[in-house]
Image (cartoon, rainbow, N blue to C red; front, top):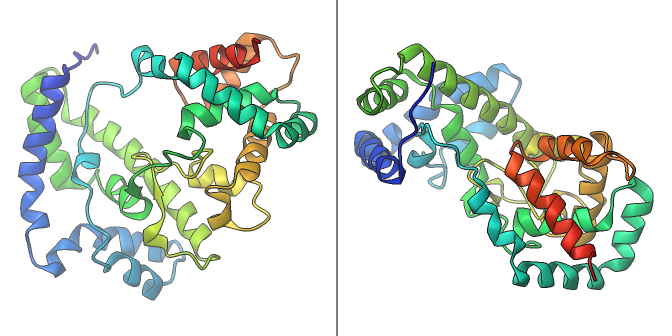
Length: 293
């Protein structure tokens, strides 16, 4: 079924209407504020997490529903236009400077993982501008909010608004989309909880992207657990250049990257890092421009 994509004005209308619909939650008493997370806490408890540990996190005033992240949009966040900012002269010069300043570590990573140092630098530029922009969202409420976006009330509100924009949309289609996103966020939330249980860092002072990506390398929590190299622990890893460089090298190698791999195969590996064709194209182009003297 072909879906019609709303323009920016319609997306703004969706957000405005949904925030209005959900506002009663955020203006209620404290017990009602936490109510959207009660089912989530129960699910996590059944999956083996300590109930007191969860209560301390979810009853904290910093654990609020992120209403915009509970909205469904029919428009992709990814576009070729978005990535042009990473191919400017300024971005290229900044990337070359980072390469020069970290050449020793980058060469070690290149030798160890068979991943070109320029590719690692390009990823760090695009993902976080070398740690300058690791995200402004508290990670726990971000993932928790997305994990409950398939609740009946939220589904109904999304459906009523999106149906007005596209009468061909079915409730079942919207429900499937919401459940996919909610289940993915729930998995990442569990991974994050597993990470912070072993750390001394305040879990509610860990910030990331709107999707839940972390640190200079912008790894999802599941990727951190599987591929991050963090000899000094999670908190240090978040903004540690060497740890980010080696973690990216390990991630790409683990997904099949090799120096002699055909370019199309390399783009397929980059797809795992960020499931976006413009992203992969940008990393390849930026890496080449960094390499050009």
